[in-house]
Image (cartoon, rainbow, N blue to C red):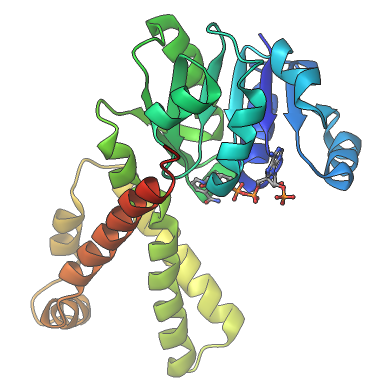
Length: 271
Ligand SMILES: NC(=O)c1ccc[n+]([C@@H]2O[C@H](COP(=O)([O-])OP(=O)(O)OC[C@H]3O[C@@H](n4cnc5c(N)ncnc54)[C@H](OP(=O)(O)O)[C@@H]3O)[C@@H](O)[C@H]2O)c1
């Protein structure tokens, strides 16, 4: 099996490297295409992926094509690959807001996966939600799942609208965590810690809390109850968050990302 990654940016390379490290495929079976000569030369030097500049040299050889360009480059790219794509090839698009129907219509592919990854894919801890067109077989879905899981975990969703919803939770979610971290870092500085000390305090606290959560069946609420005793310091902090409606504000932010994902989808309808 040969895969082609179109777009050697943040996400395209996260998949190419994830797949390569997993040993699912030999490097010579991972093709990468980008429109920048410099990027491709650099990439060949450091990774020895088979690199390409012209679509006609690699699209016909690929069994699975990852499309990892920005959504506004999709139309131009699909127009170019349209005459080369066959009904056996699988297209996995990670472009935000570009729908299964649009990909099928503009690329001529029948077997299409629309996936929504997130940035921790770069360090093997990503979450990719994905949905498939009905033409993708169960066995092909397993192959797709194995490829996606090389960058972390994946969730196959039954309904395409859940891809936009996952943008609001996991896709944009790392930034919400950074937001929370930033506030705690600032509080640390204001309390008198140095930048480095504050960084360690915050990052180890997040890491530890996630690990506790992952190693138990407890909900976040149960953990909060466990650590916040009446009249104590943690209770004071949680009460302050409740008084300020932080829970509702975070949900509102997630829905704002969900709504924006739907809007972007409409802006990217080429028809
Ligand atoms: N970054 C994230 O956290 C994230 C999360 C979820 C989904 N996504 C999706 O992932 C996709 C890629 O995002 P990214 O952050 O990896 O973008 P990126 O770093 O800008 O990478 C895109 C790459 O594709 C190249 N490119 C553009 N048009 C091309 C074409 N026609 N043929 C070949 N290469 C082409 C770009 O080159 P130039 O720079 O020269 O244009 C660039 O190297 C986007 O559609 C985005 O919606 C990203």
